[in-house]
Length: 190
Image 1 (tube, one colour):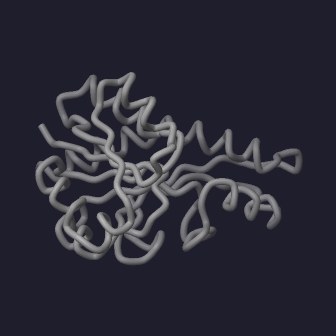
Image 2 (cartoon, helix red, strand yellow):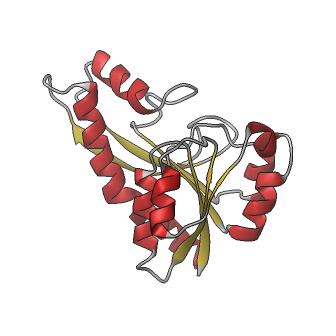
């Protein structure tokens, strides 16, 4: 059974969904959640789900091996679920093609530094896009430029607002993210 460590920065809805999904499979288990925001709601979700959630700061993440050492002990795969910091090269090197991220748009559109959450949905609305979606991809040294694993689309209309776009994206995330993670893990076992 493979071990997953989730990185989260916010409310933790995707983290909770992934934890619950893997509680019912023999493929993998979530062993820990790591969070860079000590006030994030993901801590409450992890407590209810009996999953260890640890806060870390920027120095522990990118100026030392503190986080890397935890990952080496607890992870076969890393999943970014609403995590906003760029992954340091030492972690990318240690977990090559083992770090999976979800982005709330159809990359390569609306990706890069600063493009997350409502920033993405507002840009999609301002550009009058007729569709948007999610992209699940591997993480490399650049924001949102890793190889694409999976995309799912949803149609948009003139009545959509950034808030309704966010709701549509949330449904896609909840539906597909855990299943695609499992497919990636299973494909690496072959």
